[in-house]
Length: 139
Image (cartoon, rainbow, N blue to C red):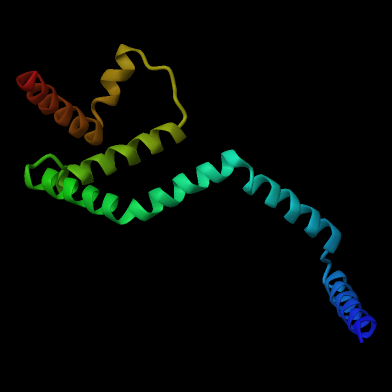
């Protein structure tokens, strides 16, 4: 009875391996990879790191809650930028991105004066002048 059972199990394993090979799965390679992974995962230093990771994962909800509380407090105290400030930062980042993509030409003093006649440049310079005044006041 045992030889028949072993024969049946062997046939099932052979059929499974044949079907896997038809799908392009190399069973030997997969088993070697699994053994290699098991060796790495069970190494003492890896087990220690995994335990630390699990401990951190258990604490994740309280850490997220603490972070949200800190953000709420910062918002209530006015330490977070408002929508207008965030839009300004976004606009500045977009301008920086576009500037990096544009060809850069050498510009002398006369070229700078010509550039300052452009309406967009006038607007940006006006903003920089106000920013400079406010920054100087706060320094």
